[in-house]
Image (cartoon, rainbow, N blue to C red; front, side, top):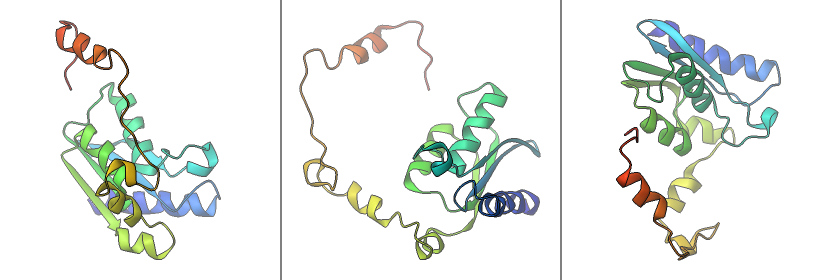
Length: 154
């Protein structure tokens, strides 16, 4: 366990030293072997979803040829943000281990408190307003999914 959290922390440090992204690193482990690594490459890739945990999940899923991380563990240099939490819950690893806390991240300018607060605000009152629209056949994809005999349930 200590070995893998140390690797995640080193990935974060290397990312800062190499000036390739933010101070975050993550590894996915299955049966004692690393199956995916990730570093924060938000600014390098111009991709706001390129967080270390998401990158590690993507790499592990590709390696394992699976959309879920059954029997895997995620080690990350920092407590996951709300977006990464969503990705983690969708990937379903058996455990997540982290080094720094979200408060530690907030102290250096990575504060997710705003996102947690916005989740409690009604859609139309959020900082980025969100409005429900009513297009014809909005649920047609849902109906097709329900009726499909070839869907892969996840």
